[in-house]
Length: 469
Image (tube, rainbow, N blue to C red; front, side):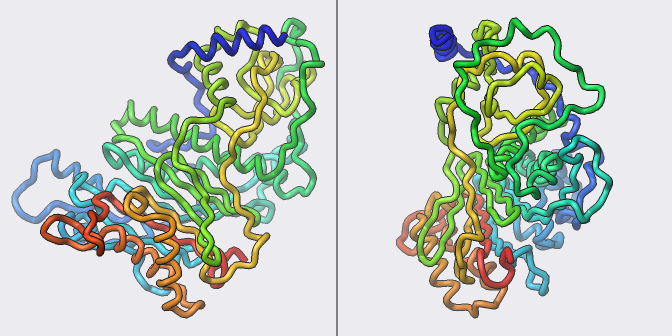
């Protein structure tokens, strides 16, 4: 058996190919049809309009109409024009109307210095309600808002080669996360460990002739420990994958522009989950200490690389192995049930319906790096402890230590119970990275070039007014 494993790995490492198509999930939100039910939200800021002069070419009108900014900025048409001005590069923040973002979150953004026609960053800040889809017993849930969960959500999306993908992700990624969490509502509320398998749904097929797929049980290690935390990680990872697949479909069918990086924060049941795909970054500044909460995109672990190759070239597995990973060996009697698994793009866990090919021997079963998780209940936070999210426009010219110094300088100038302090901090970070206009472009105080990229920053307080408590 070990020789067959080594042989399969050797073939995989030296091979590649195009990924096979995946069936569309029935729970995917559709950007071109009515979205699933969600908490009411205001419409996005209206698109900027062309000037009142002569008729503009159709292409110009379409480009202007495609420009929009996050809903919570509440920009008027005039505000949108100022936000789209490369020469002035005015910093944009939510208006000080007494209504604040969740947790009194601060936000600021500025357009690039001519790198692209419009600001290709997008941002989203939502409170999302999740209603359970089924109970652990497998029976459908009776609708009851008291049995659901709420999660807080922040997202930064840095568009590349156009803003279409970033705008799409800002509208839909949190809905994908909600869909992935629907089956976990009761499980996450239960202090007992997550069940390894969920009961099969009515009418699910039973076991069939699977003897040819069952290998020696002695090769399987002991059952892996799966936590509630890793289920949330798996749900977020699956949502990222489904969002990526939806973007690919929309790009082909509706000419969605470019791609995007995504930096997402989810607060659920006392813990903060930070997921990053791309070169944006998140750090916690707590009592002057810097805690990295994301990692810029790097090659995946060896486990994930081999799983990916197994997914790309299944014929190299010889019909004996599966590229999927399960907490323990799957049994024939579990066909049709839903068991915990993870694939090549996951470090957390999720549930899938067991099929015949899942009885094959697993190619790999190692551990990988997880989405960064921070347990807020383990620390006493003061109002100056914050989580800072920024697109690469911030980090290209600003270090973690410089951000921490700005946190200390700005917040110390405000009363601890002043909710506007976090927006002031976000503005200071954006202004510090943008610089000031001089004869040779935008310059920092040390005369080095400031960031010519779009810059977007969230500042999320971890203690004090608007905190998780």
